[in-house]
Length: 102
Image (cartoon, rainbow, N blue to C red):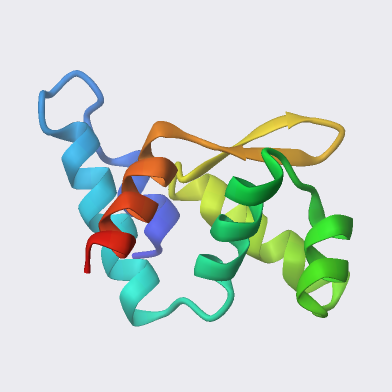
C-alpha cells in the first residue's frame, strides 16, 4: 500500500484523523525522505514555492522537485496555491514544529 492509498483510507470525520495523517507523514519523512525536509523548510522560508524555484534553490532537477512537492501534497503537508506553487498546511507546520523540538 502506498502512502497516498493509506491517506485516502483515513476517515476525516474521526477526531484522530489529523493525528493519524501526521503520524503517517512523520514515518514517511523519517524513513524514506531525501529532499522532503529541505523542501518543507524552503516553502516555509519563501511562503510559497513551485517546482522551478525548489529545483533552483536546492540544485535538483525540476522533475525531482515536482515529485517531492506531489509527495508532500499527498501527505497533506503542503497544498496547491495556483500556478504550481505550494504552501504549508497546518500539518506541514506541525511537522516542522516537531522536527525543531527534537
